[in-house]
Each structure stands twice: as C-alpha cells, then as structure tokens.
Image (cartoon, rainbow, N blue to C red):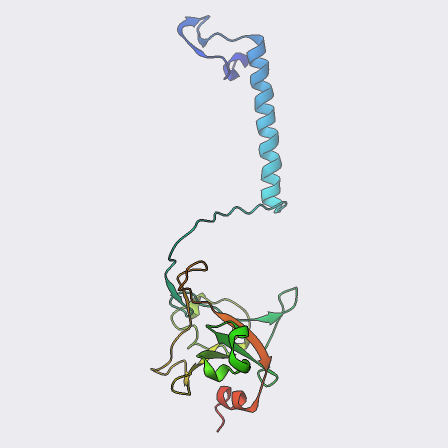
Length: 205
C-alpha cells in the first residue's frame, strides 16, 4: 500500500492522476499522517480514562415543565427507602426504639407548635415485602429489611393511623413540580421516639 493512499486531505478530482483519483502532495500526506497520529493519541488517552474510570464527567439538561404530574412514593411509581451506614456503605439497622422517622406533605416549620397530629403524615418502620410490593425481585440491597420504609399513614381528619395494607391507607405524593403554585412537596424529619410511636410500629396496645 502506497503512503499516498492514506492521504485523506486532498480533494477528489474528476480525472485520474498517475492512476489515482487524488492529486496528492507531500504536504497533504504529511498532514494526514500527523492528523492520524493526533487522533490515535487522544483516542487512547480518553479510552484509558474511561477504562480506568478517571476524571468522570456528568452532563445534565434542565428544562422548565409547567406541570410535572403526580408521583406517589410507592413501588408503582417512585419507590424509596432510607438506609443508615458509613462512608464504606456498611449498612446499620435502624433502632426505632431510639428515634422515629416521619414523612410530611408540609414543611416542618409550618406546623402549629410542631404538632404533627394536626396534619396528615407517615411513619417509617423496618422494610418488608409490603413496602416494595411488585418490585421485591429488583431490590438487591444487602440488609434491605433493616432499612426504613413507610409503614403507617395518619389521617388528620379521622385522627387514625392506617397500616400500609389497610384499604384506607394513602401514599404520599410529589405533585406538579417545584415551580408550580399547586406543588406538593414531601418532607422527611427524624425525631426522638415516644411510647405512642413504639406502640404503633410494634403493634402494642
């Protein structure tokens, strides 16, 4: 193969010149080789970064959506659970006898005297198959059943708690989007536990 055959800079001509459709010159051949060397060099450099996972880049796109819709925080839409561990991702189980986790569709600062009984809220307990119904085969987190999932819903009008399997249970919602005036946020707080919460989570009377 002639070196001139690697010349990709010279334009095609309509007539054959020395048996070739290119009118190659020494300069165009040299520039072609230099370009190929540069391409190969940077291809290897970026490939090594990718293989060795160095210098990762993240690209994202933000766009405004007037109404993002409604998303229940359950296994059919936007499932979540809370785990507690250290920087090496060694998970530690939750001790609900020491503290409680509460979910609110209100900001904590908006509560009247911090009384959660005046608003609908959700209590978290240890995860089980009911919390992740329908996607249990997809959960591969070791120690998942020691993590925290939604277990109870409190209806502030009826002054009653309902278990996740109860027909009156209602999932929290994220609705419409941050900049929508009808947005519905979800706020998670951690508080010291009390006897009433213990009775609810551990089914004690």
